Image 1 (tube, rainbow, N blue to C red):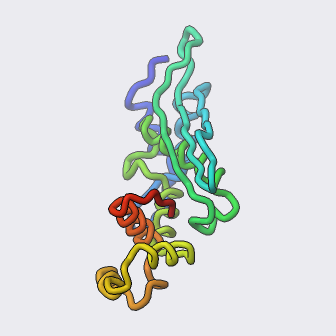
Image 2 (image 1 turned 60 degrees about the vertical axis):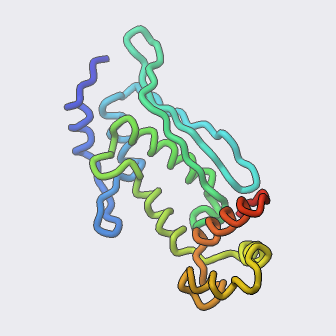
Image 3 (image 1 turned 180 degrees about the vertical axis):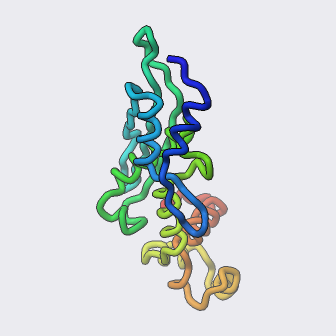
Length: 188
């Protein structure tokens, strides 16, 4: 199979994109369509690496079969999703993780990357996580990790009036940092 850059470029030109905050992103289904234009008998193989405690990890391999019937791997992509971390992940975190891994593998193979390796789905998920509020379990952990006399300074640092206003991602980072500093193993 003799694929040229122009073949991938032409396939990428057919991709419809989604505008997210003024930047265009390719959706995974569009990347799959472009891949199939160039490699009609190519393969996309997602594989779950783990699914423990509501955290799922997938990898996806993308490639094609050469003229001798041998597998030629083009790229690999991985993804991580946490159950309940976004609205869609409340019911479909496994499926979302699989789709993200496929999108990243296709991006690494050159499909839908004119603006970004990240797919529209990944960017939307990241934006949802940025705006997600802290969970009750995180509040308890932070209260256990931050001494009472440092609590007001912590609120001031994060520019919030009360701990319930802290963002999920900030809470995750704070718990991880403080737990590592205190020599504790932490899950957020």
